[in-house]
Image 1 (spheres, rainbow, N blue to C red):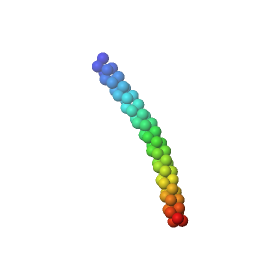
Image 2 (cartoon, rainbow, N blue to C red):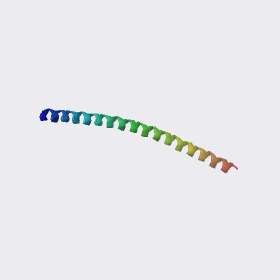
Image 3 (cartoon, helix red, strand yellow):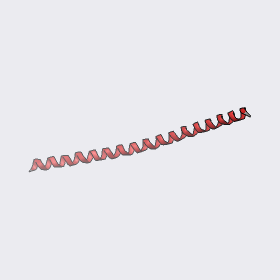
Image 4 (cartoon, one colour):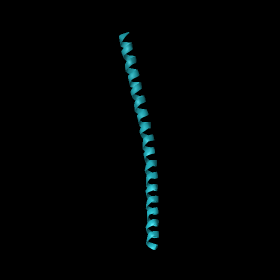
Length: 63
């Protein structure tokens, strides 16, 4: 009886560890994709700011 309980506890522990490992991997992939999207947005915004700054400098130089 005691051996069966320990065996089931071992199986349960293994299943929980497998689930946690798989879930962590999925969360890591999801977070990485969000980081990449945010990096692209940041780069676009930086480019826009630089373009606006160049236009402003050119217009001030003309005046």
